[in-house]
Amino acid sequence: MDFEALAMEGGFARPVLEAQSAFRALMDALARPGTSMAGFPVPGPPAPLSPEAGAVALALCDPDTPIWLDAAMREENAVAAWLGFHTGAPIVAHAAEAHFAFVADPGDLIGLENFAQGSQDYPDRSATLVLQVASLEGGPALRLAGPGIETERAIAPRPLPRHFARQWEQNNARFPRGIDVLLVCREGLIGLPRTVRIHQQEG
Amino acid sequence: MNAHAENIAQYNFAYLDEQTKRMIRRAILKAIAIPGYQVPFASREMPMPYGWGTGGVQVTASIIGPDDVLKVIDQGSDDTTNAVSIRAFFQKVAEVAVTTETGKASIIQTRHRIPEEPLKAGQVLVYQVPIPEPLRFLEPRETETRKMHALEEYGLMHVKLYEDIAQHGHIATTYAYPVKVEGRYVMDPSPTPKFDNPKMHMSAALQLFGAGREKRIYAIPPYTRVESLDFEDHPFEVQTFDQPCALCGGAGVYLDEVVLDDAGGRMFVCSDTDYCEKRQAEGHAGPTGSPGEGEVQ
Image 1 (cartoon, rainbow over the protein chains, first blue to last red):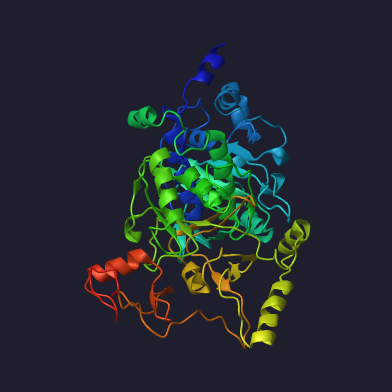
Image 2: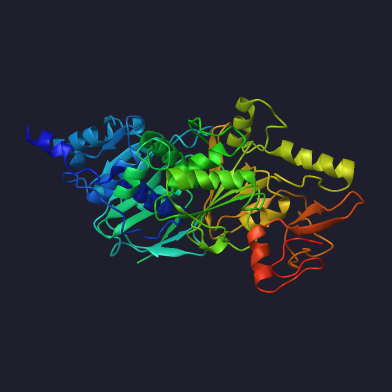
């Protein structure tokens, strides 16, 4: 009973305009990979789903987009109930069926190849992963290049999935198939579309 | 917000319902992630006929917010029917500010031109696209063209350009000139004159393409390589004009031919009206124009 009451609260205060604002931040984040977007409106979802990840869900998810939750998210029934009430998106158990994945604990994430990669004919039918990182700074230094980046950009989010640079290289190799990633935390939002090339600096 | 809710209660903000917007927004994000790939989307009926830019309108309606400043151009001009009616549409359903000045717009919806003034980071250029598939006139079957894109099999397009050279001595395609995006997908830049193709390359602005009837959305992120297809011995070239704009004297810009009388009189003026007006206001004048005067005697 308790979590049902919680599920109905914490949506966008002004759904239409706030979803638009949040979407523009997402669009800019994917169009300019590595640039941190901040200042977009956030809802109040139940923990461990963060407000920023909640904003992504409300802006993009609906009954057409199956959602996969990682173990930490699944542990709290309130998360699935909140997503269900506010977006209507079905929660799926198999990562490969999901259009969106919300991950509270990126360090423990299953391999990226487990998610829908799209097909060679329809590479758009691939998953978008929303990783809740602790910070956009303080992690291993990553240098980014590719479309959306004029020369080069440096980020250092933490924590990231295991062997992230290697996994990402494989993601690049699958192009045009592949997954897209959104890193979210209190400081903002960073987009990593499948086209971005990531070089991890040694040391 | 309340002003919006009261004044346009009969519509959702920006006309489209929220679920449609989410569907289009998801398509836009995938389009950005796969530059040049045409993402299928469930195009809606709009209160204007196909061919009037329903694809571009749906893209604009899905990204626009109350803080945006919208500019709409039709063949470079802010004041032709298509541009005026789409601008009025968004003023009515989204109550956004509009402008004719390229530099002041955050979203520019365009039919077949790219403004002469270089676009800036943060601006979004939305193209209205009639036929998104560059291979369609070479291969009518969607199943086949999809396979050709999947296998990166673009030989047919080069054969077409080669046949131009064999017949005419040069590549005779002057608009909708095919480009390759980030070295992978061959893309139709919509029927812009090939003069505008180089502006797409490494542009600071995000470029979104919407085809309403054909139900496709595609994109070029900022700072993305966009190369016009050509041959080593027949490199890509843009149109050049013998004379400057008759009104503003601008050179190195795309000109429209205007017929003046029945005796063969004609003049060439900037296709980009905002660029031309700005130059005239700055005191530049062409052979038949004078500052502040649009009419030719």
